[in-house]
Image (cartoon, rainbow, N blue to C red):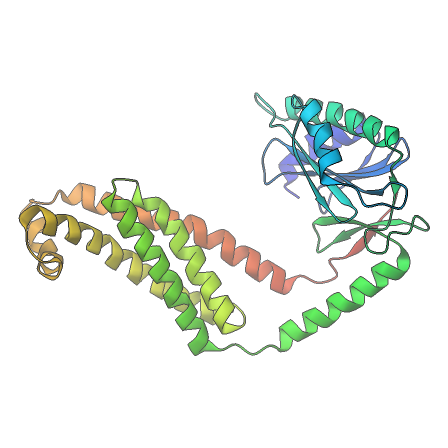
Length: 317
């Protein structure tokens, strides 16, 4: 977890009489008989509060969980129900730091548990639904889980088979480059369309990078360093071309000429200051900046997932 969050998250855990797993950043423990797992929402000042529960051998219903949200909108934003897993999201905290966000989460936690007790919910294995011999785990270094030992062992074995299959999967460079090219075409269309209707086309750079990298991974089988280099070359070239095409269409409409002629005339128009070079290159630079914003986390997360090992472990409740 981010080391700068250790202090506020430790304080949160202490206030709630829970524990903090510093590796995953998840706050966990027992609260009035319920196993609870609290995690930050995408670097925001908000939290997910997760339970694995059932009532009278029945799965939790989305409708009854959202009733809790509707009655407590001051603290809760929404709720997701998947099988035995119930995940509440708290409202965003206000002000500097995490004090307000933590206070909202503390109030939300008390409200949720009171409601669950009233409806006779109990802890359960998220896989098979048993209420016996439950253990708490972290899966893939990030996701909280609650399972019986048998289900956890089955999960680990299945996960190991998938990892080995992924490692043995061969990279299809031709397919990957094709996928990356298709991805850059999608990004190019976004840049041109947004530019033509007057919106900031730079945001499309993010679409360009994500689509290209994911396209390579999808058709190439996996995203390797070779794939990153090939995709990056395509992204750089296609951002430049699509930005120039955007300007060419505008010029063609203004001077009533064809797009190809206006495309080839752009260097001359820049040299003669008919097109403001500062504006032209600033816009191009902004597209590249947003392209970088999309590429870096996509590449980082992909390589991190590929290199992850021994990422499943048990929490001491």
